[in-house]
Length: 147
Image: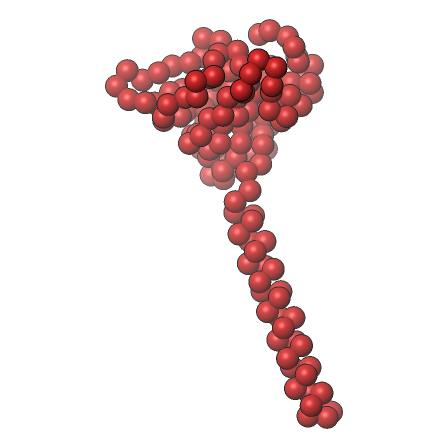
């Protein structure tokens, strides 16, 4: 093989290898930052991976909100009207957070099936519902029903 062609081949192979390494690193970083949405039924049935950051959403069960007297710890139950999941959160809840309303919590599922949330998002008006929660409620046949 001609030395010039051999040099070009080495350069092309090095560029292809570099692009492959860069793509692998980018996809790895994206994989670690993805937050998949899970309904309470999926979480309770074991579909959500423990120890990985997830989004959990549904309707806050009436009477399930428990606030700690000496800290900002809050615990409440979210349901899709089939199954329920407990969510623990430390912080100030959004102003629009209410029992009987749709929410999405971002956090980590622990080994006991409880979501340790670090962020809670509440719907912003009486007509809006997060798309994932809306789909989960439609799938359960309870959209528009009051618990």
